[in-house]
Image (cartoon, rainbow, N blue to C red; front, side, top):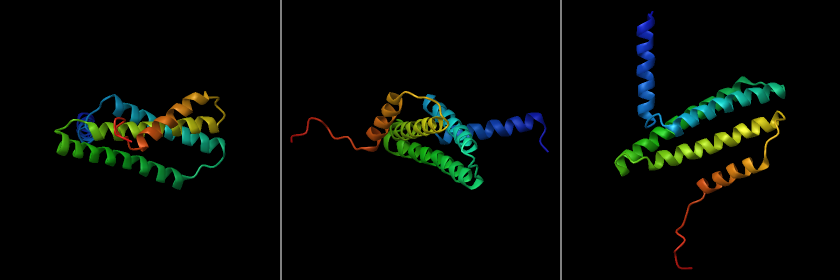
Length: 142
């Protein structure tokens, strides 16, 4: 079995590998990890509140959330190949996932009866629509 320093070394190596794969540990990556944790906790709270705890639903959700990091790693590879490491696609993917997770957290809070300002949800929905829709230059001839 691993003793204290060996276990810490393995954990540090895995954390370093994870950070390298997702392109670093910046504010967007930290926000996504926090939002995922809040979403999982909110989902558990909502399921408990509604008496609908289901391990297979949670397993699917966790698998989907682990897929987020595969998408981020792919975006990092595309950025490295096309933009010499400028984080264009990574930033887009992380922003989109953060908005979706924030909306999910708000939905969980609303489901358990937490009063929330309507404008907050509308602002996040507008951000999601903006990230979903392709932008066209405004100066194109009609």
